[in-house]
Length: 325
Ligand code: PMM
Image (cartoon, rainbow, N blue to C red; front, top):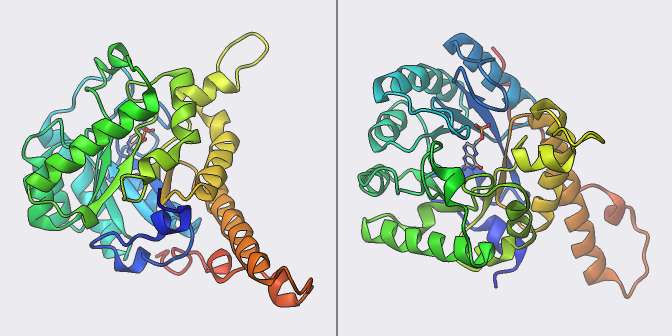
């Protein structure tokens, strides 16, 4: 098993400025959809989507993930032209601001156009299963690629959550996707893996995946965790009447997962509210650095200030601070 820091710091092709940051990255979500479960329709107009992306950058997000199709359970598919019309103008403008942009799509044609418009990462919740052309496009563009565990589109996924052992099954299915992508010409260095929390996994099935991120790290690629505002958190935080907490009430729990994921060596966390998770991953980085320093220095018993200082990774200025218009 790769140690967490090695898994977190493994370089991802096409993203040199995000390699060696020394902490877990924060990917902020920009949903250009009228019906997302978590932030339904707030940033549907292109101007509003761009403004929201810039706000996420100002809060310290490292990556902006722009999506035009809701993956809410039961959601109907959006026609390809509509998806393109939603995401391309927002990607172009955010990339022009210097943001590292990812496109959240399962369609190869959308991925290709999005990369041409400035996206540097293709975030495919289907891990290449929804569109047989995806591997070829990722290989040809050389973009970084998030390969998420998936068993079917939103209209059917809830009926496909049958596992012998959810951790082993997700690991094995991702390993198979990795092999298939490689046979399409994708380089391993392009790939980040994602357990696909909430996708064909309800409630309790998500916790073992979080508790065993090491099983995915064993596949040798960095891991992205997307827990933000998901249903399993609503259930965890249910009130005395059993009613799940509303999506906007799930941000503290999301930040807790960001801290724990960072401590477990996650490469990144995908979140709707950037600031709480940016703070959380900085805490985890400072904690990690102090542990590393005191581990090498524990014979001296020193209380030197350098040991009590926060780390460079934790102190780094937020990348978006200077990029507001
Ligand atoms: N979850 C959603 C959408 N895209 N991408 C990745 N890589 N991982 C996820 O867990 C993920 C994703 C669903 O959440 P949203 O509709 O609120 O964006």
